[in-house]
Amino acid sequence: MGRSAFISDRSEPNSLPDGPWTADDDAAFAYLERVVWQDGFRCRVCGRAGLSEPDSRKHWRYCGHCRKRFSLRAGTMFAGDTMPLGKAISAIWFMNFGEGPVYIARLERVMGTSPGATQRLFDRVSRAMSDQGLEPLGSGGDMISTSAEFERRLRLIALY
Ligand SMILES: [Zn+2]
Image (cartoon, rainbow, N blue to C red; front, side, top):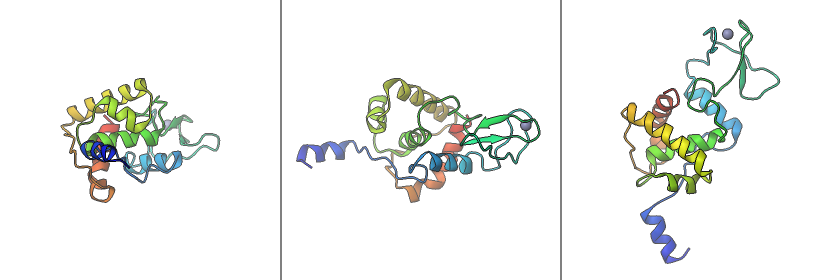
C-alpha cells in the first residue's frame, strides 16, 4: 500500500464490520430473525406467533391459522427491497458506527451497491435514525464492543 493510499485510508476509513450477518443470505436472515423478531415472528394478518417454515421458500414463514405466507422481511424497512439483506444491515452498521461522516457516495463505494439502491436505503435509515433520536456514533467500533448497542438500534430502525 502506497503512502497516499495510507493517508487516504486514515482520513476516511472504509472498513465494514465482519458481523454475524455477513457470511451469506442465511446468516443475514438468521440475524434479522434473532434481533428484530426476538419475541417471535408474528403473522402479519392474524397476529399469531409460532409460525413454521414453509418447505418451498427460504426465509419465509407459514401461518398455520390463516394459511398466509410471509417473508421475514415483512413488517420491516427491508420489505420489498432487492438489496441483499446482509448488505443492507452492513450499511446500517456503517451509518451508526463507521468512522467519519457517512454520505451517500461513500456508502455506495463501501457497499458496492447501485446509486439508486444506496440512496433509497440511506434516506430511509437517516429518517428512522433522526426520528428515533439515534445519533451516528462515528466510533469505528469493533463488533464486540458495539454489538449490543447495534442490535438495539437495528431493531428500532428496521421496525420504524
Ligand atoms: Zn395468520
